[in-house]
Length: 463
Image 1: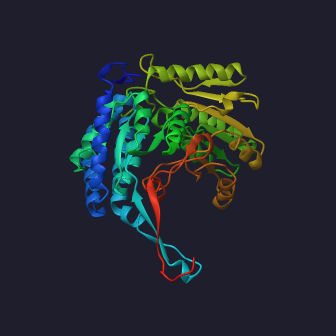
Image 2: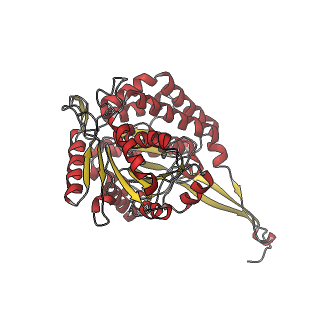
Image 3: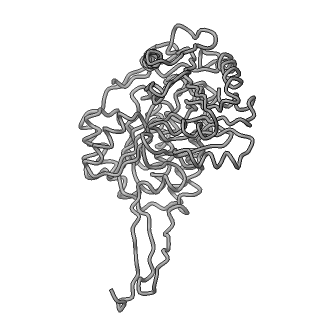
């Protein structure tokens, strides 16, 4: 796809960009590798200064950065401001903690003959980040903040519909004082991605995106023997037990499913409600969804954003039609959404039988799947009946019981009495078709470093 900013609300082409040439890609790798030779030896204190400067620029220019997000992918302006703030928090987190997270680690040894052993954590080199459009800044920040703090250098291939957001982050890091070449945005083609991964100076790739894209890039990285992390799709379970506070739970359910227009890998896509409260929940949930107002994402009164593109909206509507063909009931909710722009009418899918393949799909938009569970054990069974394993929620008045239920759900993250959230100081990642690897905190910064053993052994020690 060409790199182009198209306003999802008006369908206006704002600006387009030419694909990178092969020569430009080659030069970028040269520059990233050259920058690494110096950056890997730069002190944590200096790196932290750059991270703090980036955070400060994001906060001082928050409205400018936020408006660009809303223009390119249709995010509500308030949500765009929150994303800018989250990206700033991530930079600050690594400015404060990177050195401690990567400090040499003494190892306990069984005997003195094994010497004084320790692990040191050294940067690998040039890394490639392939990022999606739904959180254009946050997705970049959560990979470059830890990896630049670790001493690596970065190349970015962003989604084709947010090219201005990608360029804005390249300028941000330059203005924050990052050395030239250490972080570069490339409007790369798919063929160039494989060429980048095959370059011996490139040591890994982090991808956030679809299962299909992840499978291709993971295979390319594997063939090139390069480290990879994959954050792919999700169909988070939102489990409601019989003792849950229904009024508060429903409010979180409506928000958890529809923030960012429902285009979130960790949004609450599958509502799993025990039979005792199913009917009450379903009625209140439908009323809550009906109260959403679709419109101009720059208007503070709008509570439901358009999707990122007309193509994305068409894909969701087609998946709804397929789900109905397979036996599901589709109920459109709320006032009609605007005819122009990339809107989808909020829809609730129910009666998704065991033989309906749609129950295993990810609907990346304002579509909710409701499941009636016979009891708590059945709710866990339904929650685990998915190829995905990213996040999830359990709502209950008995939080200790909620933790025990959470332990039974096969996923990377589970929150009690809250939809899956993203914060600078919480790890992020999943299992199954949701990918592998972790981002943020210490887990994220250690994904792309060499965990080197150094052992000081007495020369007379036996082998």
